[in-house]
Image (tube, rainbow, N blue to C red; front, top):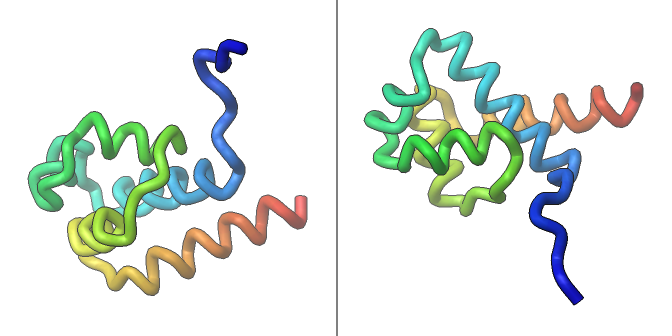
Length: 88
């Protein structure tokens, strides 16, 4: 049995990626700058924003720090994204 080349990421993962992308836009920083600030590979950050990967807690913490916000706030914004999408 072969696996599909690419499947649709779970909604929660896509929501986290949207949250990161929106916060990065609000901060006015590029993906390259966020990569520099966080020491997380630019390609990996792009994959996070697309919802293609599920970052570890450590990576999420680095992203939040790079966005100059507490991790708890980033997670709260992500939860709102998930909740808003679930409501319609």
